[in-house]
Picture 1 (cartoon, rainbow, N blue to C red):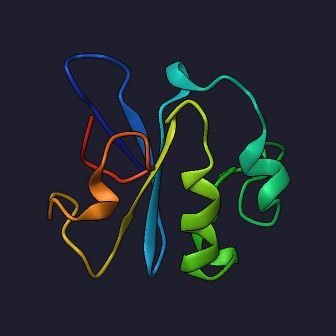
Picture 2 (cartoon, one colour):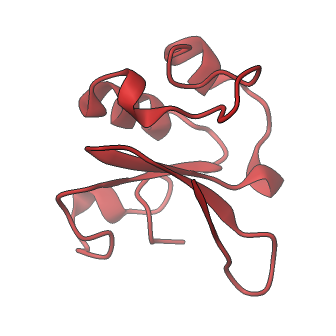
Length: 99
């Protein structure tokens, strides 16, 4: 896990897996629990770390991260550049590296 600082703020915490990295920005989270309800084996607020990207297939992790209504969760596929500008990089889709 690492912390990515943006604009001097608290930044996002990165949870690195073999196939996908999930980032979380606590200040944006609205606690809708779409992540916890959608994939509890990956997103478990009672565990440390609370995000375990390797606990499920990368495709399932991406699917659940994309459901995050606040954009607090984002992802980057390990074998793709985060700033590739592809369809996964559109705002609000859960793609890492885009505002």
